[in-house]
Length: 247
Image 1 (spheres, rainbow, N blue to C red):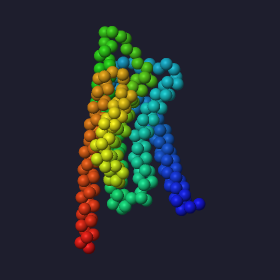
Image 2: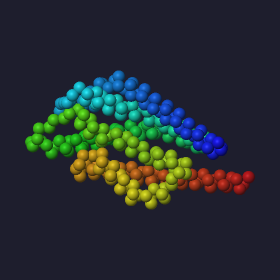
Image 3: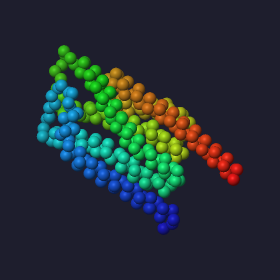
Image 4: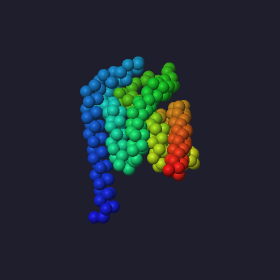
């Protein structure tokens, strides 16, 4: 076996180890949150005036596991980010290690911020708009499964999408991407974000707009932050080059 093949096997083994640790952490968080799922359920429907129906005993379990799963994902994100950092750590300089390690708390904070935006801002707007269409026309009934699917579709994607600016900053600091590339890919990015927005929202124009516009804003924030990191990186390279010339 050549050195290159040995290196590839080593990297794959390390990747497997990090994935297993992340999966085990998710399972532990899943069972931990499931112990408190009824309290979480009551909190999520505290302001909902309509009763929720279930069509069978298995639907109750499905709803509980869905709520526990989303909670477990949120708790696992810092662990997954740390395992990712450990995986790429050998290829980073000491300074890059310190910088990238600081991104981990930010990923968790942005995930919670995205969930909060989806749950407290976007979700009530879309739900109230759709309910207003049925007033005086239809008798509205909600099953727990459809209600929480609707809620998760409007909140969970924003938990991940709000991490986009930080991920872009991280990749820019490593030199993997740069702001010029993001600017050139703006049309394609807008198209993909539009598809995502349409996919995660109910089939009406108002809901689509309420989701797509924040996604565009997130992308532009990512481009701006990438420019800041890129300029800082170029400045540091210039300073280091001058110092080497002096010495």
